[in-house]
Length: 356
Image (tube, rainbow, N blue to C red; front, side, top):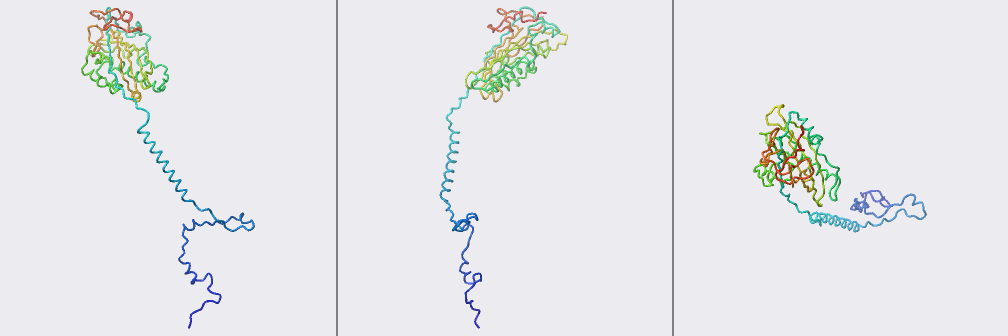
Protein backbone atom coordinates (compact mmCIF):
# COMPACT_ATOMS: atom_id res chain seq x y z
CA UNK A 1 0.00 0.00 0.00
CA UNK A 2 1.41 3.30 -0.95
CA UNK A 3 2.16 5.97 1.63
CA UNK A 4 0.25 9.17 1.93
CA UNK A 5 0.64 11.43 -1.08
CA UNK A 6 1.06 15.15 -1.25
CA UNK A 7 -2.04 17.31 -1.22
CA UNK A 8 -3.23 18.45 -4.62
CA UNK A 9 -2.34 22.09 -3.82
CA UNK A 10 1.13 21.06 -2.63
CA UNK A 11 2.74 21.15 0.76
CA UNK A 12 1.42 23.87 3.06
CA UNK A 13 3.71 26.74 3.93
CA UNK A 14 3.94 25.97 7.60
CA UNK A 15 4.07 22.21 7.38
CA UNK A 16 7.35 20.39 7.79
CA UNK A 17 8.88 19.08 4.69
CA UNK A 18 11.35 19.79 1.97
CA UNK A 19 10.88 23.58 2.30
CA UNK A 20 12.12 23.53 5.84
CA UNK A 21 15.06 21.43 4.85
CA UNK A 22 15.92 23.96 2.18
CA UNK A 23 16.41 26.86 4.68
CA UNK A 24 17.74 24.79 7.56
CA UNK A 25 21.31 25.84 6.79
CA UNK A 26 20.57 29.59 6.95
CA UNK A 27 21.51 31.09 10.39
CA UNK A 28 20.54 34.66 11.29
CA UNK A 29 23.14 35.42 13.95
CA UNK A 30 23.52 38.72 15.86
CA UNK A 31 26.15 40.17 13.56
CA UNK A 32 23.89 39.56 10.56
CA UNK A 33 21.03 41.38 12.21
CA UNK A 34 23.17 44.38 13.16
CA UNK A 35 24.50 44.61 9.62
CA UNK A 36 21.01 44.81 8.10
CA UNK A 37 20.54 48.04 6.20
CA UNK A 38 16.76 48.13 6.26
CA UNK A 39 15.00 50.26 8.81
CA UNK A 40 11.21 50.43 9.29
CA UNK A 41 9.62 53.85 8.97
CA UNK A 42 7.69 55.21 11.89
CA UNK A 43 3.86 55.30 11.87
CA UNK A 44 3.92 59.05 11.29
CA UNK A 45 6.19 58.62 8.28
CA UNK A 46 3.97 55.89 6.80
CA UNK A 47 0.88 58.17 6.77
CA UNK A 48 2.09 59.81 3.58
CA UNK A 49 0.97 58.34 0.24
CA UNK A 50 3.16 55.87 -1.61
CA UNK A 51 5.66 55.75 1.27
CA UNK A 52 7.42 52.42 1.46
CA UNK A 53 7.29 50.56 4.72
CA UNK A 54 11.07 50.48 5.10
CA UNK A 55 14.01 52.60 4.11
CA UNK A 56 17.63 51.79 3.50
CA UNK A 57 20.12 52.72 6.30
CA UNK A 58 23.42 54.30 5.35
CA UNK A 59 26.32 51.91 5.55
CA UNK A 60 28.60 52.10 8.60
CA UNK A 61 31.96 53.56 7.62
CA UNK A 62 34.19 51.36 9.70
CA UNK A 63 37.36 52.55 8.06
CA UNK A 64 36.77 56.17 9.16
CA UNK A 65 36.32 55.17 12.81
CA UNK A 66 39.48 53.09 12.71
CA UNK A 67 41.48 56.02 11.31
CA UNK A 68 40.14 58.38 14.01
CA UNK A 69 41.08 55.95 16.76
CA UNK A 70 44.56 55.57 15.29
CA UNK A 71 45.07 59.35 15.12
CA UNK A 72 43.94 59.72 18.75
CA UNK A 73 46.40 57.06 19.90
CA UNK A 74 49.23 58.73 18.00
CA UNK A 75 48.43 62.14 19.57
CA UNK A 76 48.37 60.69 23.09
CA UNK A 77 51.68 58.94 22.49
CA UNK A 78 53.33 62.11 21.18
CA UNK A 79 52.05 64.18 24.13
CA UNK A 80 53.26 61.62 26.64
CA UNK A 81 56.68 61.42 25.01
CA UNK A 82 57.00 65.21 24.94
CA UNK A 83 56.18 65.43 28.66
CA UNK A 84 58.89 62.90 29.47
CA UNK A 85 61.41 64.70 27.27
CA UNK A 86 60.71 68.08 28.83
CA UNK A 87 61.05 66.57 32.29
CA UNK A 88 64.51 65.26 31.46
CA UNK A 89 65.77 68.01 29.18
CA UNK A 90 63.99 71.19 30.32
CA UNK A 91 65.30 74.50 28.96
CA UNK A 92 65.89 76.03 32.43
CA UNK A 93 69.24 75.46 34.00
CA UNK A 94 69.22 74.25 37.62
CA UNK A 95 71.15 76.73 39.79
CA UNK A 96 74.50 75.40 40.88
CA UNK A 97 74.60 74.53 44.58
CA UNK A 98 76.48 77.15 46.58
CA UNK A 99 78.65 75.94 49.40
CA UNK A 100 78.25 77.96 52.62
CA UNK A 101 81.14 80.18 53.58
CA UNK A 102 82.98 79.39 56.82
CA UNK A 103 81.68 81.45 59.72
CA UNK A 104 83.83 84.49 60.41
CA UNK A 105 83.71 85.39 64.11
CA UNK A 106 85.07 88.08 66.38
CA UNK A 107 84.73 88.16 70.19
CA UNK A 108 85.79 91.38 71.90
CA UNK A 109 86.07 91.45 75.72
CA UNK A 110 85.13 94.73 77.42
CA UNK A 111 87.08 95.43 80.62
CA UNK A 112 85.47 97.51 83.41
CA UNK A 113 87.18 100.75 84.40
CA UNK A 114 86.38 100.20 88.06
CA UNK A 115 85.00 97.53 90.37
CA UNK A 116 81.97 95.73 89.05
CA UNK A 117 78.84 97.02 90.84
CA UNK A 118 76.66 94.43 92.51
CA UNK A 119 73.78 93.84 94.90
CA UNK A 120 71.69 90.92 96.10
CA UNK A 121 68.59 92.64 94.70
CA UNK A 122 68.52 91.62 91.06
CA UNK A 123 65.53 93.84 90.27
CA UNK A 124 67.47 96.84 91.57
CA UNK A 125 70.37 95.93 89.29
CA UNK A 126 68.17 96.04 86.22
CA UNK A 127 66.24 99.11 87.39
CA UNK A 128 69.48 101.14 87.60
CA UNK A 129 70.89 99.97 84.27
CA UNK A 130 70.19 100.75 80.61
CA UNK A 131 68.43 97.36 80.45
CA UNK A 132 65.57 98.59 82.63
CA UNK A 133 63.24 98.98 79.64
CA UNK A 134 64.32 95.81 77.87
CA UNK A 135 61.89 92.97 77.36
CA UNK A 136 62.37 89.58 78.94
CA UNK A 137 63.65 86.58 77.00
CA UNK A 138 62.36 85.77 73.53
CA UNK A 139 59.84 88.63 73.74
CA UNK A 140 62.77 90.98 73.21
CA UNK A 141 63.50 89.43 69.80
CA UNK A 142 60.71 90.89 67.73
CA UNK A 143 60.05 90.23 64.05
CA UNK A 144 59.68 93.24 61.77
CA UNK A 145 56.78 93.71 59.39
CA UNK A 146 57.78 91.45 56.52
CA UNK A 147 57.31 92.16 52.85
CA UNK A 148 57.86 89.94 49.87
CA UNK A 149 60.89 90.56 47.69
CA UNK A 150 61.31 90.25 43.95
CA UNK A 151 61.94 86.49 44.17
CA UNK A 152 60.71 85.48 47.65
CA UNK A 153 57.17 85.42 49.01
CA UNK A 154 55.96 86.87 52.30
CA UNK A 155 55.93 83.41 53.89
CA UNK A 156 59.54 82.75 52.81
CA UNK A 157 60.72 86.04 54.30
CA UNK A 158 58.87 85.25 57.54
CA UNK A 159 60.48 81.80 57.59
CA UNK A 160 63.96 83.36 57.32
CA UNK A 161 63.24 85.85 60.12
CA UNK A 162 61.70 83.17 62.34
CA UNK A 163 64.66 80.83 61.85
CA UNK A 164 67.08 83.63 62.76
CA UNK A 165 65.04 84.35 65.89
CA UNK A 166 65.04 80.67 66.84
CA UNK A 167 68.81 80.62 66.49
CA UNK A 168 69.15 83.66 68.75
CA UNK A 169 66.83 82.15 71.36
CA UNK A 170 68.63 78.81 71.43
CA UNK A 171 72.16 80.25 71.34
CA UNK A 172 71.63 83.18 73.74
CA UNK A 173 68.76 82.29 76.10
CA UNK A 174 68.61 78.51 76.55
CA UNK A 175 69.82 77.83 80.15
CA UNK A 176 71.36 74.48 79.15
CA UNK A 177 73.41 76.20 76.47
CA UNK A 178 74.39 79.14 78.69
CA UNK A 179 75.58 77.22 81.72
CA UNK A 180 76.42 73.75 80.42
CA UNK A 181 77.90 71.88 77.52
CA UNK A 182 74.71 71.53 75.47
CA UNK A 183 75.00 72.71 71.89
CA UNK A 184 72.56 70.48 70.00
CA UNK A 185 69.68 73.02 70.16
CA UNK A 186 71.94 75.37 68.18
CA UNK A 187 73.51 72.77 65.93
CA UNK A 188 70.22 71.51 64.46
CA UNK A 189 69.43 75.01 63.15
CA UNK A 190 72.57 75.24 61.03
CA UNK A 191 73.04 74.43 57.35
CA UNK A 192 74.42 70.85 57.23
CA UNK A 193 77.47 72.02 55.30
CA UNK A 194 78.54 74.14 58.31
CA UNK A 195 78.37 71.30 60.81
CA UNK A 196 82.00 70.24 60.34
CA UNK A 197 83.17 73.73 61.28
CA UNK A 198 80.74 73.82 64.20
CA UNK A 199 81.85 70.43 65.55
CA UNK A 200 85.54 71.27 65.17
CA UNK A 201 84.99 74.50 67.09
CA UNK A 202 83.82 72.55 70.13
CA UNK A 203 86.21 69.63 69.81
CA UNK A 204 89.31 71.77 69.18
CA UNK A 205 88.61 75.44 70.10
CA UNK A 206 91.07 77.83 68.49
CA UNK A 207 91.33 81.62 68.52
CA UNK A 208 91.64 81.79 64.73
CA UNK A 209 88.43 83.64 63.96
CA UNK A 210 86.84 80.41 62.71
CA UNK A 211 86.67 77.89 65.56
CA UNK A 212 85.60 79.58 68.80
CA UNK A 213 82.48 78.18 70.51
CA UNK A 214 81.70 81.69 71.78
CA UNK A 215 81.32 82.79 68.16
CA UNK A 216 78.46 80.33 67.71
CA UNK A 217 76.69 80.82 71.06
CA UNK A 218 76.85 82.40 74.51
CA UNK A 219 78.41 80.06 77.07
CA UNK A 220 79.64 80.82 80.57
CA UNK A 221 82.15 78.87 82.61
CA UNK A 222 79.87 76.94 85.01
CA UNK A 223 82.73 76.59 87.50
CA UNK A 224 82.83 80.36 87.89
CA UNK A 225 79.34 81.82 87.49
CA UNK A 226 75.66 80.92 87.26
CA UNK A 227 72.43 82.74 86.46
CA UNK A 228 71.07 84.75 89.39
CA UNK A 229 67.83 85.35 87.48
CA UNK A 230 66.45 83.34 84.53
CA UNK A 231 64.70 86.48 83.23
CA UNK A 232 67.32 87.64 80.75
CA UNK A 233 66.78 91.13 79.33
CA UNK A 234 66.90 91.52 75.54
CA UNK A 235 66.62 94.30 72.99
CA UNK A 236 67.52 94.48 69.31
CA UNK A 237 66.50 94.38 65.67
CA UNK A 238 66.09 91.94 62.80
CA UNK A 239 66.13 92.90 59.11
CA UNK A 240 65.77 90.82 55.95
CA UNK A 241 66.88 91.56 52.40
CA UNK A 242 67.26 89.72 49.10
CA UNK A 243 70.82 89.53 47.79
CA UNK A 244 70.02 87.63 44.59
CA UNK A 245 67.24 85.54 43.10
CA UNK A 246 68.21 82.51 45.21
CA UNK A 247 69.41 84.06 48.48
CA UNK A 248 67.90 85.88 51.43
CA UNK A 249 70.02 87.49 54.16
CA UNK A 250 68.94 88.36 57.68
CA UNK A 251 70.93 90.71 59.92
CA UNK A 252 70.44 90.73 63.68
CA UNK A 253 71.77 93.15 66.28
CA UNK A 254 70.76 92.32 69.87
CA UNK A 255 71.97 93.14 73.34
CA UNK A 256 71.50 90.48 76.04
CA UNK A 257 71.87 91.34 79.74
CA UNK A 258 72.38 88.51 82.24
CA UNK A 259 72.30 88.68 86.05
CA UNK A 260 75.12 86.45 87.39
CA UNK A 261 76.44 85.41 90.78
CA UNK A 262 79.31 83.11 91.83
CA UNK A 263 78.61 79.41 91.28
CA UNK A 264 77.16 77.76 94.39
CA UNK A 265 76.44 81.05 96.18
CA UNK A 266 73.15 81.43 98.02
CA UNK A 267 70.46 83.94 97.17
CA UNK A 268 71.99 86.53 99.51
CA UNK A 269 75.20 86.77 97.51
CA UNK A 270 75.68 89.87 95.42
CA UNK A 271 74.76 89.60 91.78
CA UNK A 272 76.10 91.64 88.89
CA UNK A 273 75.10 92.27 85.31
CA UNK A 274 76.91 90.90 82.29
CA UNK A 275 76.20 92.33 78.85
CA UNK A 276 76.64 90.60 75.50
CA UNK A 277 76.00 92.38 72.23
CA UNK A 278 75.72 90.02 69.25
CA UNK A 279 75.66 91.10 65.63
CA UNK A 280 74.92 88.09 63.44
CA UNK A 281 74.43 87.75 59.69
CA UNK A 282 72.47 84.79 58.35
CA UNK A 283 72.14 83.56 54.78
CA UNK A 284 69.29 81.41 53.43
CA UNK A 285 68.94 79.56 50.15
CA UNK A 286 65.70 77.82 49.21
CA UNK A 287 66.76 74.52 50.78
CA UNK A 288 67.54 76.33 54.06
CA UNK A 289 64.08 77.89 54.05
CA UNK A 290 62.44 74.54 53.38
CA UNK A 291 64.43 72.79 56.14
CA UNK A 292 64.17 75.64 58.69
CA UNK A 293 67.95 75.98 58.82
CA UNK A 294 70.37 78.89 58.45
CA UNK A 295 73.87 79.58 57.27
CA UNK A 296 75.64 81.78 59.82
CA UNK A 297 78.26 83.82 57.96
CA UNK A 298 79.31 86.56 60.43
CA UNK A 299 79.34 86.67 64.22
CA UNK A 300 80.52 89.86 65.92
CA UNK A 301 80.39 89.84 69.73
CA UNK A 302 81.16 92.40 72.43
CA UNK A 303 80.95 91.14 76.01
CA UNK A 304 81.74 92.52 79.45
CA UNK A 305 82.76 92.99 82.12
CA UNK A 306 85.68 90.74 81.15
CA UNK A 307 89.40 90.90 81.69
CA UNK A 308 91.26 91.60 78.47
CA UNK A 309 93.75 88.88 79.31
CA UNK A 310 90.98 86.31 79.72
CA UNK A 311 90.66 83.65 77.02
CA UNK A 312 87.19 83.98 75.52
CA UNK A 313 87.60 81.28 72.89
CA UNK A 314 85.80 78.43 74.59
CA UNK A 315 83.81 80.04 77.45
CA UNK A 316 83.08 83.45 78.88
CA UNK A 317 84.43 84.08 82.40
CA UNK A 318 82.78 87.30 83.55
CA UNK A 319 84.14 89.55 86.26
CA UNK A 320 81.59 89.42 89.06
CA UNK A 321 80.43 91.89 91.71
CA UNK A 322 83.31 93.73 93.37
CA UNK A 323 85.99 92.43 90.95
CA UNK A 324 88.21 94.66 88.85
CA UNK A 325 90.21 94.15 85.68
CA UNK A 326 93.98 94.31 85.89
CA UNK A 327 94.24 96.50 82.86
CA UNK A 328 91.73 98.29 80.64
CA UNK A 329 91.77 98.64 76.91
CA UNK A 330 91.44 101.69 74.67
CA UNK A 331 88.71 104.32 74.99
CA UNK A 332 85.50 103.08 76.58
CA UNK A 333 83.09 101.04 74.44
CA UNK A 334 79.38 101.06 75.19
CA UNK A 335 77.61 97.89 73.95
CA UNK A 336 74.28 99.73 74.27
CA UNK A 337 75.36 102.29 71.66
CA UNK A 338 74.67 101.76 67.97
CA UNK A 339 78.28 102.05 66.82
CA UNK A 340 80.55 99.06 66.45
CA UNK A 341 83.64 98.44 68.51
CA UNK A 342 86.92 98.55 66.65
CA UNK A 343 89.38 97.22 69.25
CA UNK A 344 90.28 93.61 70.00
CA UNK A 345 89.85 94.49 73.66
CA UNK A 346 87.85 97.45 74.86
CA UNK A 347 86.94 99.21 78.07
CA UNK A 348 83.40 98.84 79.29
CA UNK A 349 81.92 102.33 79.45
CA UNK A 350 80.70 103.44 82.86
CA UNK A 351 77.33 104.26 81.30
CA UNK A 352 76.83 100.54 80.55
CA UNK A 353 77.05 99.59 84.25
CA UNK A 354 74.29 99.85 86.87
CA UNK A 355 74.41 103.08 88.88
CA UNK A 356 73.82 101.82 92.40
